[in-house]
Length: 310
Image (cartoon, rainbow, N blue to C red; front, top):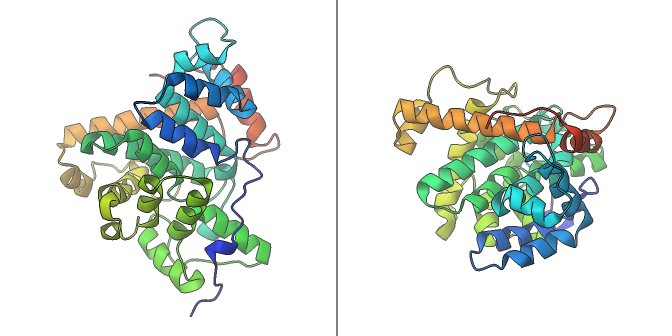
């Protein structure tokens, strides 16, 4: 019996918390992924959006990236960061506000959803390189694979409803089954529908939609399968209070699936942890507090003095 039926067509997909319109991100992603794109087109897109320009300048002048002098122009900032890093940084920062908020329906406290999403994005990027997939596309899929949970949370809140799942999020296949019973759809379906409205392409939307049924993803089956691998790696990258910090030893199932030796797998995990530390160094503490997430982000990017090891 469906207790709280949800209709994706009726869900509000606007996010007031985002300083960057989400519709601009798929355009930027497509341009960065296309080797035939004129770099001037990317620069122009960033210049024309005040929020994007501000994010890039502050990031380029942050402690981690700053070359030792103040960068004043967008062109110099992009040259300092590189086009691929520009896209990843912009996407991560654009969603940091909404992802930092607690999702009570899914028993996620402040900051937990952001940490899990970034860890998954980094794992997806790494896996994509191993399997010959587009790392930029994979990063986007990993970062936004659970975005549907945000909209389910918002919808339930607007209805004044509360839902408690029997399973915890790391067992997300079980969560998806409960979602079907309660809502008549899963957060994967909701997220894919919203991302399609924003303008993301099938190569990103279809794997998200079919993350629980990869065999249904058609030409995008491999990327849909990689989501399962990446989500399994989250608990080895971060300590989010759900699956525990990095497992005491290498994950034997992942080692077998990825065809890696234990030593190779440990190197991958170490690199991913370093990448996550870098992301946290850029964004700072995303836990909502008295100052608010956005001010914390701006403070860290504009005046941060910490340097995370590269």
